[in-house]
Length: 199
Image (cartoon, rainbow, N blue to C red):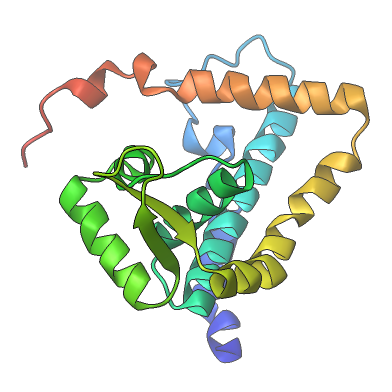
């Protein structure tokens, strides 16, 4: 593995990746963003912001893969367990329908997932305390303890990074992240609702 990381191809890929999200490299003719009235230093700093976002996304992706591998579950399964655990922490009841809505998957896919998680000893299905026709979902104490002791503690390190900021810095980060989410929303992407391009 280490030899692969030091191979010429890997080194070349790393060199190219450093410019992958640099706006001057990805948009040299200013077709996407008009930067004619911007200070080059501002453009470079924005490029550093984009690279930092990519670094966070790559870290989250690697953590998700490692978490699923450690628990011997799929990333979808991990999302389901996390949702159920947090809901249970609040005293809320999660039904298969609620879980399916959160994960945006069909009832059949939810049933298949729950069968797998129950067989693996990760969840408990009980009769809903109010609607006897439905089931409520809980994570088993064993899986909860394992997830909290390992993955949960690691994920909680995000809090430390936020705590190191001043209140004003946190407000700036909050505004920035919500603003970027709005900019990237599919509500601003008409092409996403058009017929796919046929090759």
